[in-house]
Length: 389
Image 1: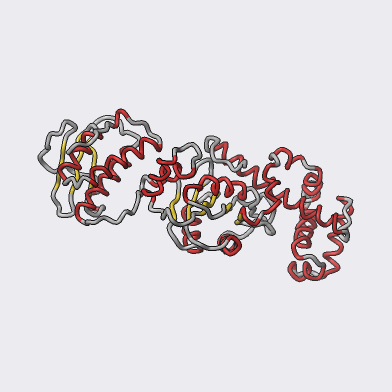
Image 2: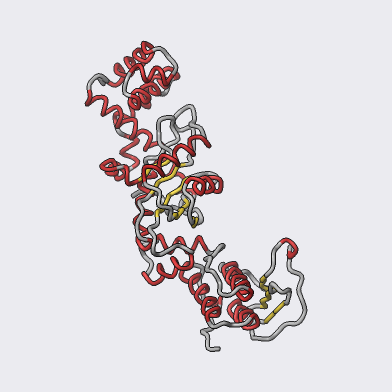
């Protein structure tokens, strides 16, 4: 069989090298190579002894020079893993892509037992594939290949979600329940996690369902700044080859998410409309805005914080009586609290313009709190992937 022989020593650790390994094993599979040939080529690629146990229980081992190795080594935790198995007998330091090699070798051995194979994509290689899908810098041919390997349907639109959470796993499970369909999750980058879904759920329904589910799973903290996600920014549905655009939209939408009582845990870019322009406001400008500074000063005391909470409720519900009902207080209490806010801010909440300004200031304040936390996460994770727009 004629087959280009790769060597791990000639590969880096990035997505391009990962895709070359994947393409290498796909070439072996398409050539109908048997188990001996697959393991032999894997050993040459790894440049060390390599072994595999077939579903039948037969063990095949080869050295890097194409020499067949007799005997069955002790593979750690072998009893805990289903057949088939694959391992590297590397004496020196591991290569960053060893696990990708093993994953593809395992896949090839499984396909020897089940033909024709159903492409399920990668498991351990998925994060790198998602990085290729979401990058504007990749060649189209590489993105086409990544779409195929990830298991996404190239004929269906994809939507990208930007997830910020301390515990990613439970939130991804929640997303799977809310929008069933194929999901591909990347490793966190810059404090964020990208989730791709091809479910056809419409923007408003998906956004409301995710917000409701997140709010129920993680109740709002008693004060702004007291909670840390989880938040989700939702990009628009578009061609799988335009996923970088949906990813950029999701990161912009994420700036509007908040854990505060009257904030939104999930925000869809498609529902922002002209509010999207606020995503271009630098964090420093938000923190220094005069209206935000006044509200923060007012909220610095227990009484003032209660007044600000009442103002937020009033801006959401629109009337004294509805606000009083939601807060479980008398409407005269709401009126007294709002009067103190008016005195501190020089707003007349009976005036539509001032009421709009109050609503905008509260939104910008939530954005400032969330953006500061996202910026801190970016700094802690190396400065990539932050939703700066």
